[in-house]
Length: 29
Image (cartoon, rainbow, N blue to C red):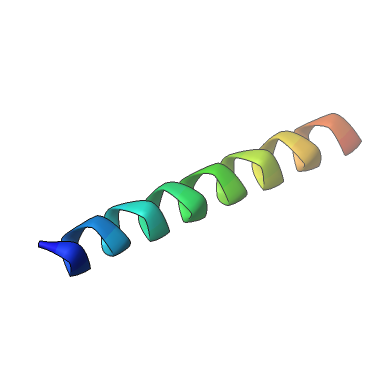
């Protein structure tokens, strides 16, 4: 159960990081 929570948190951080990265690339372009 706890590992599921950690995995969920990790996926959330990965999603926010990638989305912000994409937003940065769009802003630069």
